[in-house]
Image (cartoon, rainbow, N blue to C red; front, side, top):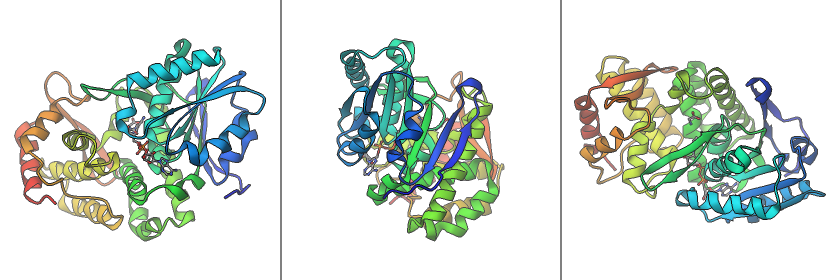
Length: 368
Ligand code: NAD
Ligand code: GLY
C-alpha cells in the first residue's frame, strides 16, 4: 500500500556519520527520499529468494539510470556465511563498483548483517542502506552498524562495525511477514523496554492486544520507541565499550538455546524472549531484583504469544557450556546482562556458574 504521509524520522547521532531511520508506509516507493543517499553510479541490492520476489522490483525502480545488479542468497541463518560474502564481493567486482558505490540490504537481519559486512569489506568500506523487511530487523538489527556473518565455530563471530547511510523501514513489508516472525520482532521491542524504559514497558503491557492484531498506530509507535531507545544507546557507545552491552539482555541464555537447537528450533527473537526471562530469574536468585518484575515480564511475553519455557530435551550442562563461549565473557568468567528492575539492566561480571546452572536446571523441569 502506498501512502505519502511523512514518515517518523529518528536520527542516529554519530557526527558526520549520523543517519536517519525512516519508519512509515510506502517508503520503498519513495525513491526520491532514499535515492538522495546514493553518492555514486553503482548499486548492488542484496536480498534473499523469499523477499526479492515480493519487494525487489519496487526498489529497483528507484535505481533508474544507475548501473545496478542484485545478489540473492538462499533463505535462512545458515546462509549468513563467509562464502556468501565472497560471492557478494564478486558481484560488486562484476558490476565494476567504485568506492562511491552503494549496497542496498533488502530483507531481514540475515540479509542486513551480511550485506553490511559486504559493504564494510569492499574497497575497505563503502556506503550501504538498510531496507529491513522483518519487524526484528526494523527495531534492532538494521540500526547501529553491527554487521557480520556466522562461522562454523559460532554465530556472528566475524564482523565489523559499519554504519548504514540510512534505514528505510517500510511497514508495508510487514503485511507479508509470517506471524511467528512478527512475534519474534515483538520480543526485541520488549527487550528495549526491559533494559532501559520502564514507562514503555507499561505501555507495552497496555497495548499487547493492539500489537497482536498489528494495529498500525500502536505498531508504529512501538517501532519508533524501540528505535529511539537503541539510537540513543548507539550514539553514546557505538562500539560497545560499555552501555551498548546492555542491549544483549537475554542473549547469553538465548544464544545457547539457539545453538543447542541448531538454529532450527527457536527463532532469534524467541531465544531472546526465553533468555530474558531466565536472566530475570537469575537476577532474582542473586538478590538483585524482586519476583514481581519477573512475573510482569513473563505475563507480557505470554500476552504477545512468545515462548517462556525452554525447548523439550534441553540439557542444562550443555547450555552452560555454550554460555561459556559467549563473546561478552572475559578472562574465563561469565559476564551477563541482568536487571535490578524493569527498565534497569546491568552488566554483571563473575557470575557464579552454580547459580546459572540452578536456573537452567529449574527451567528444564518445566520445559514444553
Ligand atoms: P531473517 O532475516 O532470517 O528473516 C526471517 C524470515 O522472514 C526469513 O525466512 C525471511 O526470508 C523472511 N522474511 C523477511 N522479510 C519478509 C517479509 N516482509 N515477508 C515475508 N517474509 C519475510 O531473520 P530476522 O529475524 O530478521 O534476523 C535475524 C538475524 O538478525 C540473525 O542472524 C541475528 O543474528 C541478526 N541480528 C543482528 C543484529 C545486529 O545488531 N546486527 C541484532 C539482532 C539480530
Ligand atoms: N543487538 C545488539 C546491538 O546492536 O548492540
